[in-house]
Length: 243
Image (cartoon, rainbow, N blue to C red; front, side, top):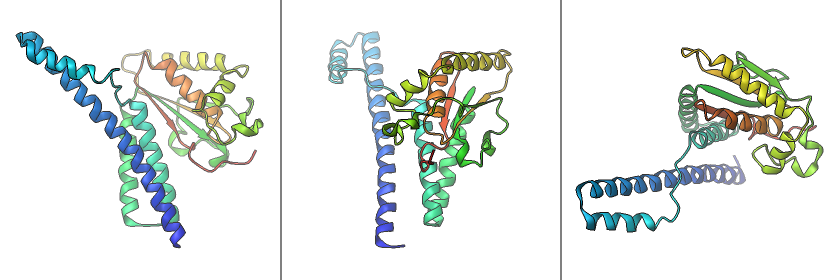
């Protein structure tokens, strides 16, 4: 491995750690805020006016209420971590990377198991024009390749379905919203029985970056009020395939 390779690998790990630190800070900030809320409630309950006033002043310093780390953020991080480590392991084999990858995949699997609905985006082009093995038994498989490809717009090629211009273009494509509606109805039908098992929906495009990602995100949003939903993007961090 050259010095440039070492630097690239190091830079990748640093960026991964930054994402982990961001989630950690968000978690700790919310935990501190919740402690103050509990302190204020206790002070109010027992009539400790000085303590209540102090807790309210501390809460006011936050301005807006800090948000919690969502299941989607955790899934996204662990999926990105697993994809990054998998790429590094292919390029720079090492025992430490193998252990880290196994841990990331275990955390990702644990989060997915908690969901009532699992939605997975992927790119057929990365899997020999087939559905990936881990979702080939999905209850619903949607092939979005016949729909308009955002990559006809050169400025959108490097973007993903998470980005507003791509997301807006995909949802504005004829047939996508009715398909979202029909898919959501099918998921609710699968989940109608109280004893129903978790439902998996696999959504495929060519690259797994644009149509499938935007559709998966929207479907998750449509279903989240009724179910615990896990949205995963299998190929969003992989190399961009040519049209």
